[in-house]
Length: 183
Image 1: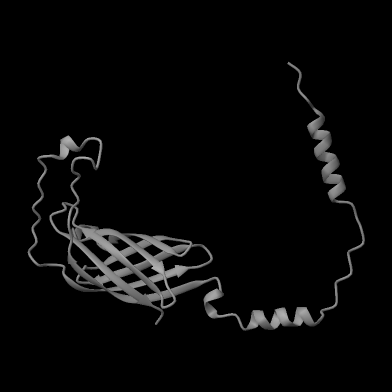
Image 2: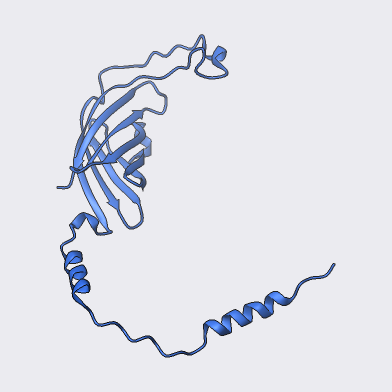
């Protein structure tokens, strides 16, 4: 089997051509259009900057539901026919929960906290376009509280979205909606 060794020579030639010394092009003198561009950039809103943005809001928690597939929903619907769910809805973990989210525009990383009726929890997620997706985990894993997901969309006023939460045993399920704005 023959190997082609011209690739090394070709790479060296490209590297040599790229490193050739030539006089730098003179920098253009700023004209009226350049001045206008600089002025427009200075007037850009703070939202256009890439950096952490903090949102604060309130989540209203209410009893959630558990989806159980029925005929036609999934290929194995027969296996779900006799499934029943009866949660222990004792009226706990309902009402207002506080939400604080930090969205890092530069990296897309989302972090935050959830407190109040939901108990103390942390959020970690991502900003994908104008959508925020996050996982909600217990601040203290031993307290067996609510965990779940957060989904939100960016709006002119801030973030609007929903949370889906449950205990690890799924005996208590909660859902909620929220609006969060910059403080």
